[in-house]
Image (spheres, rainbow, N blue to C red):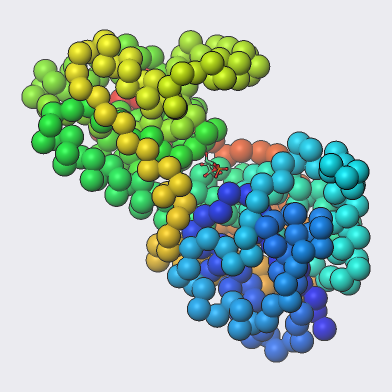
Length: 357
Ligand code: F6P
């Protein structure tokens, strides 16, 4: 009898269900007797012992369903060692429930924060296999995370829709794309949507350069400009501030987000009409795109294989077009960021896209 605990943690994304289905189908297909404990709302379920007993049938019919059938929540790694409001030691509680239920392993689906805690549980002696989810595609150790391509499709569609109205009115349009620390989503959706200017957290912008790019387009006869801005885009001046100073500055921000701040400045400097569109959590919602359905299913089945072989302590990732197992200690605590020197950035620049740098 194999006893598996499974949970999804952190912000949700498309194809979480597809990935879990992949794991469970592989295990069921092996013919081994199986007990599945689905922990509810991420690590919270493991900490407080909230779970549902599941069977293979629970994972049927969910390939195309967005979100997660287990629910999710954020359990910050920063405070994982701090007792909860009732004095409960969260790490000990997770270990206690794992051993109480006599689990053979935990399957954990999540992004960066989730992987730090997963690695901690591994260090504490639990058997863990993880799967890389996030629309941000910023997880170290894998070229691709599931959820990313679906979000690129949605953000691109938003830019496509904005294109026609921007062209009709001759306006500057800013589309704010998700990604506080990392700009993969903005970069890809921006390029796919034909954005003229792309502003990323990794490449601090100079507003004068952004304005110059808008004016140059106008001189060349283009009446409109599309700017794809990541949530975490930062100006060159702000990039010089310490983390603490920048956080303080953000607290005093009067506009709802960076896109509105940039819009206001562009309007002031150019006198042009500027509009902002924020697709927000729409980018994380709905059915996974076909790529993600296949990708998550593949990762899931490889995770199932690892479990059947008793190989633990790995994230199943994707490197150089192959599914690989990556030791959790290599993944935890690192971000995969867009390098300003990356080929894709250089190619975008050759196309005439302005990064404001
Ligand atoms: O980590 C994924 C992500 O969607 C980011 O791109 C975004 O900045 C953040 O989560 C939003 O978090 P929340 O859903 O907690 O508002």
